[in-house]
Amino acid sequence: MPLLDLGAAIAIGLSYFTIIYLTGLGGLFSERSGIVNIGLEGLMISGTVMGAWGAINWGPVAGLAIGAMSGLLFSMVHAVATVTFRVDHIVSGVVINVVALGLARFLSQLFFGSASQSTSGVPNFGTIDIPLLSSLPAGLGRAFQDMSPMTLIAFALVFPVIFALNRTRFGLRLRSAGENPEATRTVGVRVVPLRYSGVALSGLLAGLSGAFLAIEVNALYQEGQTQGLGFIALAALILGNWSPSRLMVGALLFGFAQAVPLRLGDAPIIGVLPDQFVRMIPYIVTIVAIAGFVGRVQPPAAAGKAYEGTGGT
Image (cartoon, rainbow, N blue to C red):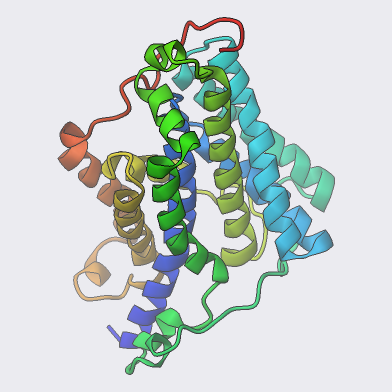
């Protein structure tokens, strides 16, 4: 396999890492507050169509912002259902995913005149080269050339997220709401606003990653382009044991797994496998990773459990 292809595969892996990590961080905030959110896929879908529309009309920055806000607003449906009306979190998340498919088709028809895709060439950000790394020989430097700034932002986010969750009043209270909401309420902290905030952050980040997928990775909106990445982000979150730094490792693993069928299909061993099996590799990696570690993880104690507090507390 040429090293040039390996460099291109790493570049694609980093792009998909960005998508999975941003979405996984959204799930982390939601579940740390006590709300299980399997609707991340649907929130990403809303971000793809709205982000592409925003970028076409006002540029890539506006597209990312509009995609993120659409995810945030859509996530409030999940928050109202699970926090206010105490609907089962899994049922609500499934509804979010199903509704998102129909909503995306409607918006795509409205915005682009087609129910399945926008025009190609959605404007994106300028790219950057990473000093030193972009000069690596034998094609490896290509992995660090023409990189989206959003990838660097995704890597940098791990530090403020860790600080926020472990050192700030908001983060500590958010975590307490997901571990023991009754004890949180007894010390005068309102649980309901914290859970709304956690779900809102999940929608914001999932919508942002969906917009990044449409704007930066594919340069168009296309129906089905998320391809289960929201669920893979959930898998990375579980594999990372609800820790931002460990989530990063899981996102890198699954991101590079996505690059295998896209760039490494002709590599030794992989090249002799049936094409259908090669396309399954990212999902096989996800299943194997979760199956190997799921018994060793410990989710927030109150995640998925209805909170019976009243009066907006």
